[in-house]
Amino acid sequence: MQCGWKFRSKSHSPFRAGSRAVVRLLIVPSAMKPTTLPLAEPTDPGVLGVYQLKRLWSRMMRQRHGQPADAGAEAPVEHVVLDGLGVGLEQTLQYLFQTGPSFAEFEQWILARTGGVSAKQIARINAMIIGAPCPPEIARWLAEVEAEPPVLSAAELAFWEEYGYVIVPDAVPEASRAAATQAILDHVGATAEDPDSWYQPNDHGIMVQIFQHPAFTANRQSRRVHKAFAQLWHTADLWVSTDRAGFNVPERPGWTFRGPDLHWDVSLARPIPFGTQGILYLTDTEPEQGAFTLVPGFHRRLDAWLDRLPPGADPRRQDLHALGSQPIAGRAGDLIIWHQALPHGSRPNRASRPRIAIHQYAPCPDGSARALDLSLRS
Image 1 (cartoon, rainbow, N blue to C red):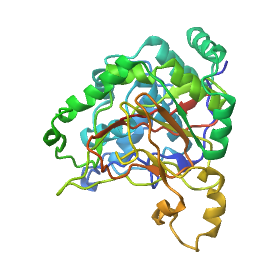
Image 2 (image 1 turned 180 degrees about the vertical axis):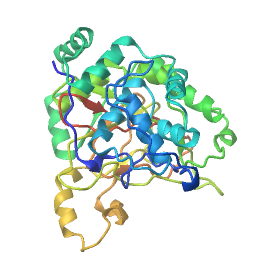
Image 3 (image 1 turned 90 degrees about the horizontal axis):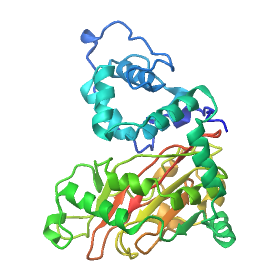
């Protein structure tokens, strides 16, 4: 089994319009710019021994100094390298641009955030970069997932093809689901039974900048989740992405819904590639509770809709709810997986309980190594 990579077009840069990874760049004034910074080779390892990491760092340092630094077709693979290390794309870019660390400091920052990266995970990342076979331990693990009984039935797979989403019940263990919910509440300083504690100042809308926690890791590594995604991708060779949390509280006077509303996390340049995203409800979630919302079946209508737009019209600025948006209610432990071509987002919470989430997004590149996108939400 190969762990290789087939690069995609430049439209998958993390800095593209509509991307979730929006970072305010700190550009060094021209008078302070050094000579052009060197770009590291993909196999320059550093202390951690991770390929492509030093190249990513050197590229970001060049961009920070206003020098040419387009990642181009390497952007998707660099995103997966970060996911493989257990750090989020937005989290990493924010640190690099705001701090401007040395590469040694960057590696130490990764270790501090993650608590360490296993040797087998580093070996898998490096095999992906150079197109080598997966390490034997990884190959055995992927083979086990492939051999497991299906999670999605034939009827559920047919529903997926028609509507572009599917619900997987009881996707993660009860203990890790409850622990993830509590971790998010603790991070925002909220108490589940004290509504006044839910309304904390936050300049990221409903998003919360927490990326790592043992409970998140346990849920991301659920074999039931892995198998469901493997059925949709027709391969178990998937990468779990890492992203921030969300906390969507009920509206009240002086506190209204701050988005994100319906949107896409993928470039709308055609052809739009296959890709998956997901949300795991951590508690029972009703439609009016700011439930996850999408436009069912729009992956089958998107091309025709784009063709009908007036010349120069921005598809992202249309009334996407008029396309047939639908809130998706669910029970605690329900995993909702959807096709990335569907408009999707949050909605105003008009219930009495908050909706808590971990949002994860990673582009799903071509080739045998693909990015698995799992979100945890209540």
